[in-house]
Length: 390
Length: 133
Ligand code: SF4
Ligand code: SF4
Image (cartoon, rainbow over the protein chains, first blue to last red):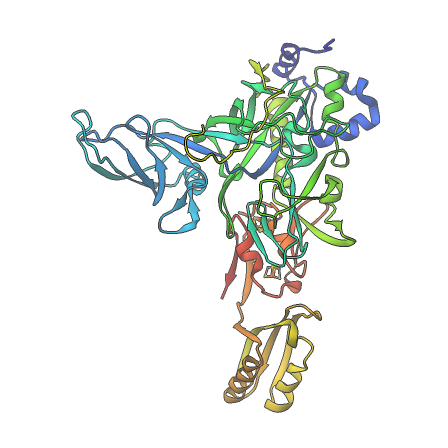
């Protein structure tokens, strides 16, 4: 029943004739023209998000030193990095903290500094030298020009919706959702709502394994479903999950990225995270995709959770939509509570805009997923098992 | 001498006429630059105190004894707009709405409303808000 295929849309893109709009622009277009006409006229809708994504990191390959030394235990700018791979590969985890500066500098900042072209200090020890890797330690500097491969490989990004946070207790809480002021002092939320990639393709009809995307200012790909991918979350009438659900594992060439869309960040009293810019193009294959991409803040709902309860099952304070959240305040127990975003809506919009320009200019073609993302996996909790029961 | 200070009043003493005593008992000239005082909450005053050095010191000591927190003033809060990622985290913690987002979702900083509490400095994940002394 498709009215357009990926190939047809790509032909138009190559000729510079594709009609591309952002997910924000699509709302009014569908309101004005209806889904049928919009699906005929619009070829691609671009989405964007720029928020902290803790489950991120990057692989680096340094090449071999003289004498050859296995980089078994390693630090970059005093931040421990993972060397339990072949000799000179390491993985830098975004949330790892500096042994000298604590949370003020960490893995995410290494990634940002690398992208900025800065020189970084590598220190490594090889506690078990071998005949093939006789060196015992090394200390040197590296940058974008000197390393072999450097690629971002984020196990979980672009969460499809997220729960908002508040705090009913008399104590200020320091969380990955920012500072939560006592006695419902504020509410924070963390998605780009109507611009967010997976909220515009709620059942992953066009976004799947192999999808080419905007990642950190460069080009990346969807590598897999993200960790904790949970598509079976309860959904509202529009198909929007009411809280964290689908996720994506993303990969892309770090050397071609831009620090405007990849930033180290510090959440007071919590730790480090990486702000990642992600933009995904959605082909308007038919009327249903036009309808999905016209979703607006009012139709996207989430729940506000009380973070003062230290449990994985935090109580729901209330259900809200993003129009309310983005208005600046929501009502809790009869009081107006100020809301604050964590995801940058402005920069999310900039990403959707840049991706739109890339496609319009014929610089960026769409990819049909090689495999769809699962629609039935469940996010399981970790049960603490004693002794040999397992 | 002239001295700029930020005073923090615990809720209990917010309603006491403390600045009045500074004028009357210590003969100081007081200029209130910014104030955020609400009953039942921690109050903040940014003050300029003027008078002979000895009197200024005595006056401040009197405040301290009354449980008022005293900080020498940070001259300014500086926001590096170039590096700001416009996340909005600072907006929800700023007690006076000196920091806000406009309709276009751009960050606005109204220095007139800032009471130099520095809450935003620690809250900013991109570390682009600084205290300039
Ligand atoms: S918290 Fe920092 S980076 Fe975020 S909007 Fe405020 S000043 Fe900008
Ligand atoms: S220091 Fe920051 S948080 Fe405090 S009033 Fe000024 S702008 Fe607002």
